[in-house]
Length: 255
Image 1: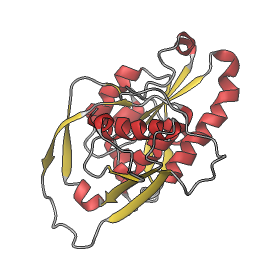
Image 2: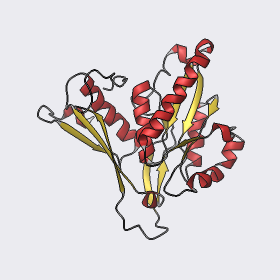
Image 3: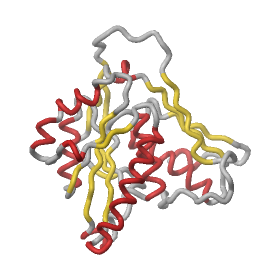
């Protein structure tokens, strides 16, 4: 990638703003810098930013490709023979107007169970209800989801989803240890803030990320754009702020 050709010897901080980047672009780029830091090649500090504006985001729809797959560098352990017998739990982040894309990803992943992720709390307190209603056919038929399978995550706090995913992984490991193991598969097709939580969990536990990359975007203004500034999220992912003895994020090699 282009970032690997840059001279970073005199750079102390790298900032990645994912507000206008797709998951297929942002996730490999961020992992590249995380791996450089782990190898001691710097830059030592990695910052992630995203501008969160649900009103604006709701008026932008993506045009998905026809080929679902795993994001580059995020196949997890699915390439290992031991993974063939593992119980696969799919965690898709629901978003308005993405039923077709998520259905394709579901068919590609072929999970044993599905736990859809709904934003709650959210700026619009009814957003989770609206999404559940929009995906009611998927819940009842292909995905076979009931109310106990739904995962709720704070729309404006990526750490909430990050901790939730790690908690699910911790709960499933001892249960499926004697039956082939367990694999969590993430599909961050929702808000960029929540995708940060999925990214951090995927890095730490080496989880696969199944995705349908966007090849374009349509902007259809439905309401007057809000005049207030978007909510800015900053995640200091790696760097001097953390004790040097803390465990490193788990990684796989990206060329």
